[in-house]
Every structure is written in C-alpha cells, then in structure tokens.
Length: 480
Image 1 (cartoon, rainbow, N blue to C red):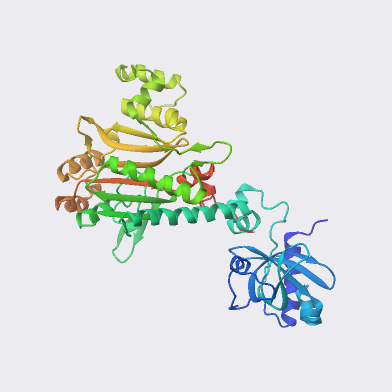
Image 2 (cartoon, rainbow, N blue to C red):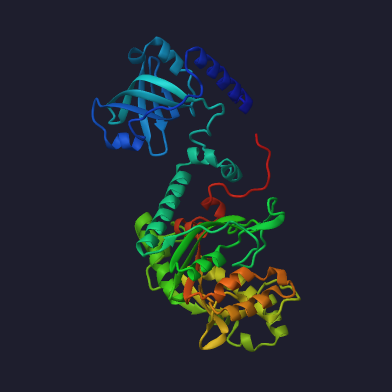
C-alpha cells in the first residue's frame, strides 16, 4: 500500500531529526558557489575544484556510493558521493537525504565512463530540508488545477512549464530593449488612483484611511501616461499591472500585465509599424523565427499583416446590406446566427456583439481591424474623412485582441464632451484633473496597449491565460 502524504512527511521529519543529530542543521545559511550549475558546466575542466548547490532531484544508491542529480535555476548537474571520499559518518548522513532537499557540495570535476560531467564530492552540507515529497518523476504533476495552484511544484516537475516562463522572461526583456533602442523612456504611474480611467471596466475598490476616502486599483495607466506627454516626455512606455474586477475565463484574469506606449507627434499608423516591428523582433530573438504558436495551430507572422475595416468584416459575415437593415431585422439575423442578445441593446451594441462573438475569434493570422464606430472609443480622434468612425486599430491574432491603438484625442473640449456622454448623470466620474492637464496642451500622439499575457499565449501556443501567468487567480481551496 502506498504511504500517505502524512506518512511521507513523518518519515522526512524523522530523517531531519537524525541529520540534526549528525551535525547537519536542517535549514542552513549562505553557501558560496563557484557559480550556477550552467556556469560550472560551461567552464568544465577535469579535476577542477568547484562548490555547487541545488535541489536533489534524483538519488541513485549504489551501496558504497551514490549518484545524484542537483538542479538549480540554470541547469542540472550530476554529483558522485563515495564512502571512501567523504568518510563513514558523512556518507551515512548523506543517505538520510530525500529528493527535494537542497544541499551544497564541494569537490572535483570528472567525467564518468558514460561521458557525464560530474562533481566528485569530498564534502557536503544540508541547506534546506524538504518536508514534503516532490511529484513522482515519471508521472509529474498532471492535475491542471493543482498545477496552477501549486505552481512551484509545476515548475519543478514539468520542465516545459519552466521553459515557457523562461521564454516569457526573455520576451519581456527583449520588449524593453527594443523600446529603449528606439528612444522610449520607461516610467511608472500610480496603481492606486482616485478614480478609474482609461478603459471601460469595473475596478477593485480599497479604502485609503489616511485620506478617509475610497480609492481604486487602476484599470489602465493611460490617463497618467498622457499627463506625461503634456509634461514633455515624448516617447514613454510602462510595463504595468492592471486590475479589473470582472470574471475569470480562458482569456481573462483580474490581474494582468499590459504594455502601454505613447509617442508624441505620430498617430495610429506609427503605432502599427511599432507593434509589428516589436512582435517580429521578439519572435526572432526568443523563438528563432516567424512561425509561432506551436504545432497544432502554427501562425505565420511574415509581413505584411492583413488590414480590414470593422464595417467590412461585419458585412463579410452578416451580408452587404447589414447596415441598411432595420433594428428588428438586424436583431433577428444576429439571433439566427446563434447570438443571445439583450433586448435593451441598441443597434450599435448588437453589431459589436456580432464582431466580438462571430468575427474576432475567426481572425487567426495577424489582422489590423480599423475604423471602429466612434461611440465605442471616447479617447481617440475621429477619422478625418468620416467622423462616425475613430482612427484606431485592434490587432487580432489567433482570435484574440492583442493590441488596441489610437490616434489619441488631444482636444480638451472634445474630450470633455465625450467624457460627459460616457458618464451621463454621474458627474463625479468626470476626471477633471486629466481634463485640466489636456488644457495645458498635449501634443498629437499615437498610443497603444499590448496585452503581454495574451501575446505570450499566442507566441507559444497556449489556450488558457492561466498557462501564461505564474500565479493565476483561482477559486479558494483548502491548503493541504
């Protein structure tokens, strides 16, 4: 019968007690390393003295000797512990170690008969005792919910998870370097704000006791970044955390990472070039080419990327006469296509439901969707040739919006009118401080947001945003 989790823990506690009696404190302190395991491997020389540390992943007891694998954040490395090399007492104590324990070893490098680079240990020290076992080597951590909830075990047990997040880290570093090389300044703006702005979303609220007032966690940094344009920063970006008090889904997490970029004296066309060049750069630098998304649904990022207007996509899906239909006829046609519509929705929202539910998910190859109805986006300038539309795009890849971009509204009087329409009778929601900043003169500008979590999903072929976030939000569960 397989031992229970508590029985494993009790055995490890017993081993810890015996190790302490042998002079090995169960939770050690600093251990000076010759380098990370990857660096030791890269600088391998026969008989070279090294000090290495890591987590014991596998232990292979050969009787009077033990082979084991150490792993740190960079690599795996084999160690050899022989009774003759370290003495009877230290060898007996070593056999009390369990997989998952962290140890440090000192010894000489050599190559085994099978060609494996190995440390021949002549001393070792316990650095941290693991009181619970790691997931089984061959079965790993298969339960999806447990993988999200105990990501630390997922990272240990499933190398592909660690590889994904290593790629995410590299991608974010490349994004920063790409923007820095083009003269953008990285800035930080408030996460706790007096009122939510820059997007239409439900905020999280909190209480600021020192000011005796309610505050919100930001839903977007947009209005503060535009204040910086007023202040003379002409190329800025922020890699930020946004918070939206909305539902959980495969593409939504209430806390998410967004890249927002603003550049003075350009427009939405400048943003189009910028985002395309940036994504191509990241794909080449991190993934080695322009075919991304995994084997099941590969995506070719080779430019030029498609551009289509919002209205043209609606007509392609619903018929060329869609915008000439009566509201009742349009509603019947949308319901016949499988949509469930709120009876109170005006024609604009019915059309937008068609776009979001029937069209957007079909746009697999990179597509710039342009010229949205002006009523949907109050922070953008209207198209010069037709004020019914705004000068914007949404970049959609693999059926997901990745990057909305605008020719930003810098007319304070027009912006006030749009805000007044948006807030209706709730005048307290009017951001007077932002409007005051605009009245001091904001240069014409292009602005853009890039959903980093969604971009990582697309580049690496993941279907759930939970796979792209180290610690996604989950429903409550009892900690074992």
